[in-house]
Image (cartoon, rainbow, N blue to C red; front, side, top):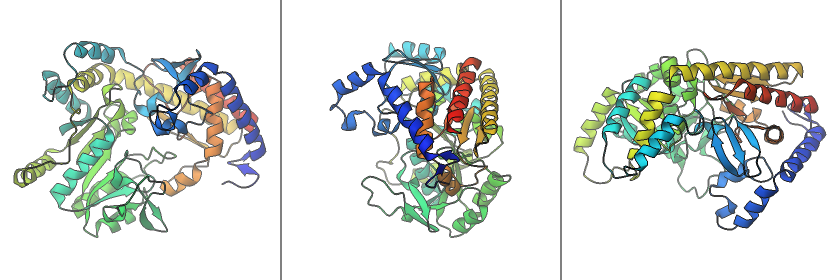
Length: 455
């Protein structure tokens, strides 16, 4: 809770004094970055190539000169331990050697030509080995994969709506940009240029609320439930016991498909959360790191759904399907996908990640307990998050309340000034196969130093 005196147990005056000092320290240490940004101003809308690059908590963005392993080097020469890892895009480390070799080989053979390759066939077999037997399609982003999966769900069920969970994020899929307000589904506040009434095509309920899920499904207009196994794009929310079994049972009872988006929870272990916890989605989606950092997403449907879609597809009028983009499923994607699945995404890699993430989560908990902060830590495989509120959280509404932007921004900048980068939009940290113990221990020590001042 926030009041005029404290934010999540921290005195506001103390917090703001630290935040101002850390912002000044960051800016003073990066004259080359500031000069380069000033020189390049005006070429991009908002001076950055993607608008959310302005949303990092620092006074101005860090300019990266090089990324290797689990470390970044900026233009001012600072070497930063990277626990953000491209918000999962580089979860296996920056430029894994097998993927880098695959890029060099494929670059000599052509970048895109709208036709399959033998490597594509080999990658398909590896996808089945890693994630289970699905009929796969390739996209460039998980946003695209989710969008295409929803088209299939609507096609085979003949129903218009998708059910998602309040506070979710599935990329920039219009249908999922909804929230609960006063118990009703509305388009999220802040959407740019929104004109469609999204409640016509989507419905939101709270995560972990099976009664609300059943009430929504009972209306008969839900084509699919689209969910992450764990809510990760807000303060992290774990599924309660029986929740996923309940989703599977209810979706089958009411004739809706179950789509599991593992774009973040691929951190859970080899094969993602679904394989580790024996989930059985109708459609499986993963993106970001699946090809080692090359923009790639995969989505696969069960044989049953594939057969239903083949029947639908055989009888639809000819014309554009609304699925697929010209540069998707290009040979460079498959070269990287094959290399990553076969040589990077291995049992040994995940064992290292799990061990390091446990070391990190245990260290953060010790610091929080030592300072008696009313916070908690959540871990899902290689993904760790500290949350500036008591826990555990049970749904998106609680996650939104737990989020403390002013406090978190100050901590993020202070961590960066001490050599550790974490995800900008929440307090997420990833441990890669190449993250070292000393990097983890430096982050824990920096966190302790920051909390010592705050508390």
